[in-house]
Image (cartoon, rainbow, N blue to C red):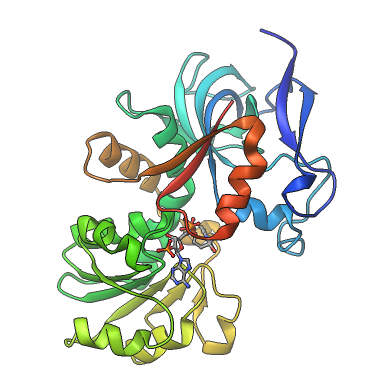
Length: 306
Ligand SMILES: NC(=O)c1ccc[n+]([C@@H]2O[C@H](COP(=O)([O-])OP(=O)(O)OC[C@H]3O[C@@H](n4cnc5c(N)ncnc54)[C@H](OP(=O)(O)O)[C@@H]3O)[C@@H](O)[C@H]2O)c1
């Protein structure tokens, strides 16, 4: 093993051109941490938002910064006090700067990778699975209810639709026409987003919408109108949530659903939870991956491989 490793880093906020390859010294895991040799890293919209400086108040960035969190790989070193993991264990979870050949992670933030899960799919799961479980949990849904998912074809939406269908809900999901067959395959009734959304939803769901999950941030007022008020609407993406009286969930520890990643990974390994990997990029092409994410029309997930 070498004592340096390749990462993708940025030293100032900006567009994707601020990303560059940076060789770093291999860090030792601290107490409670593991070091993971990364086999695949998931790309999330938060990565380009942080890089662009849009999250500077919420996530202050120390430069040089390595983007990313979602990873899957093999533990190659453990820090003091870590029990339950050893070098050689295959894991997935949340690391500290995932666009890299190696990453440190809190041992509590990773789980064992089910054997049949590919590295790419394992790396795609953590953020979207944790987020979808959390949002559905906060909506406190009951079997037989109708849920509207806005942004249903993206990573979070894809998981949320399937979990909701499995819980016995009727799901209406928004996407562009090109993703309507895809949403049907997940079990949702597809509706085109944009102007006239409320009328189109009423047409396909005359029974009414009981709760709405905003995973897009573009149509919050229509979601509130369709749900009959803000109480049973939740958003992960709308910056104007407070103006609508809607709860924004950013994933505070109190909001987390323990065991959600392990359950989601097991379902994915059994083929009961689908998450298409729309494209795999080499690590060195992280800028192109972030540009595609920022363009806003990924179906499922983008993944990097070192
Ligand atoms: N607060 C949190 O804890 C948290 C956690 C995870 C994600 N997020 C945020 O939640 C959002 C979704 O995340 P993600 O990972 O699912 O993103 P993503 O995978 O990049 O979402 C892409 C999807 O958005 C759809 N879309 C584009 N414009 C839309 C519109 N106007 N209305 C409805 N859907 C539209 C696209 O569908 P078409 O291709 O059919 O247009 C595409 O399938 C992002 O803003 C992300 O930053 C927040």
